Length: 111
Length: 114
Image 1 (cartoon, rainbow over the protein chains, first blue to last red):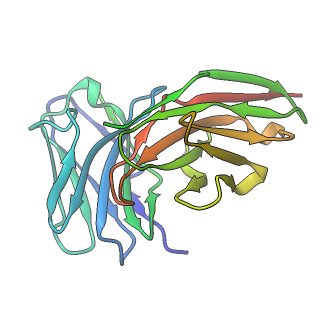
Image 2: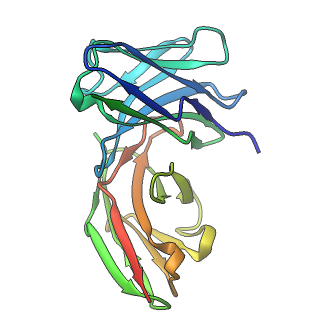
């Protein structure tokens, strides 16, 4: 069964550094998403992406964040100048046939 | 904007007892509803979904949910729980198309005791 994959599974970075979280969506899907889950809290929508551009974004997704589909298979989330409060689990998802399929997540720890 | 309210943050229950996890949604457009389960330190696993058709939806692991449009609810039920059902359960809504972003509830922590 096809699945969404994410790398790395755990990323530790120092405050102020830039990180790139990577996702490989399911190959025939056209819509891609990033969600965030701060420890012990609910899953929050960050951004959706379609046809090589952002289709919707939440108030969380400010100028610190950017997304890209650099090569037709990967879908990345870049966080510039990370802050302690960016520590969270980041989930990628892709959509097809009426369902969003979630990846296993990347746990980002900012120290 | 759509939103989801999960009315119980924690639900403790004894093994083999029935359980209901409550979910209410708010939306001005047609909706699609989902329940996900999250085991400790793991990702989100889809339990079941309502897209259209029958309002009673059956999912994996013996769970089912009923879409009630008049009460804007999508409660999750299981007639007899197991220790292994201990996890966090999230209700989510999207719409009016399949590809709209998903909004999650705050989650309900189900703890099954022996």
